[in-house]
Length: 271
Image 1: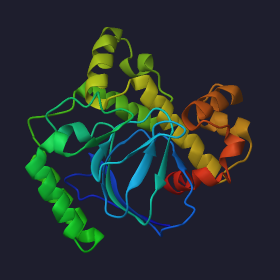
Image 2: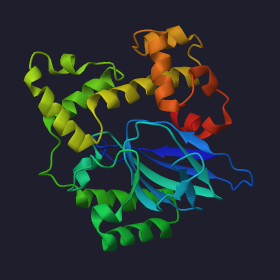
Image 3: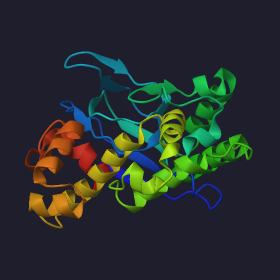
Image 4: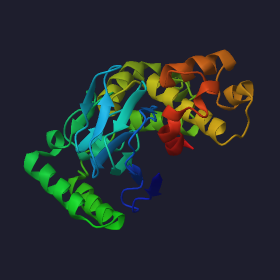
């Protein structure tokens, strides 16, 4: 596997976490890969063979070749049909809504073709340019020019939503909404409504995903193999709380995660 990340230019660095590419040679016995929620929205272009996305144990769809992957709050399986070659943009949780004029609350847990956001002609033109580009540098230049054109300066993320996300990121997902809003709890309903509209998931769901990422990094980088230590370092109440959340988002317990052949891709992304 060849997985690389690239940083955006300064005009987009507050909205985009990174660009990434993944190349994997075709395998005759390719395994399903379980993808774990990471708290981001991504725009992806499939440049290689088709990729299956399982909707149940035996049923699947073919992922759109140019798509937006909304927030995921549960794990899912993908399986390549041949050579994998993907170019993608990973947005911060509040980043993608700056580039579109439609609510993104309905994007969670699914792939949406980019033509539904930008129109068929514009989407086809963008996809053609990305396909015809000869390397990642050219693709990054193409997508940055496109996004900068789309960026509407009059469209700003609601300050309450951004403050909440910043606090969740700064505390690895452990900050409570009550703490973030301090005494102004009258904003709670407004926050929930705006957060769902602009981010696509609730503050609590996003916080849980961010906290899981902290635990995953400790686990994958072998900072410690003691689950109790990982739980406390990641701000869980206790080990039982950690294991419960881990199973909710990955489908297995932490000890089963390491070395699982279905987790190779997720391990690569989150290590």
